[in-house]
Amino acid sequence: MESIEDIFKEVETDTPVSIRLECTGNPMENGELSSFSMKVSGTSEEKEHFNKWLKKLKSTALTFYQIQK
Image (cartoon, rainbow, N blue to C red; front, top):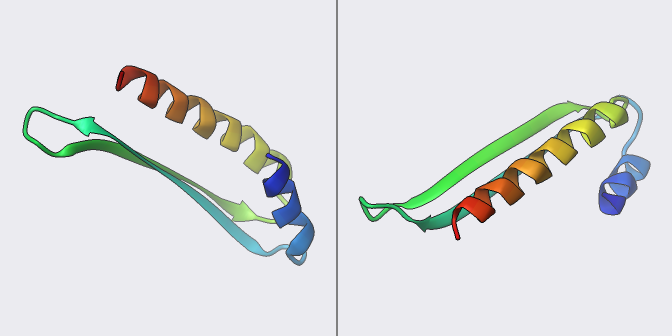
């Protein structure tokens, strides 16, 4: 989360910002890897929005990898 704070310090006011999380897991029965992706978009003025959704992204990714065990 600290690196996200650094990003918001570097960009200008009202700059479009998009963060995408891609996770790849174990092979499924059909041989393809299990995977999912999520994306959060907005502007640099919506820092609180991003922090809220990034926490949800992190939680979802951790759940995904726990299921893969």
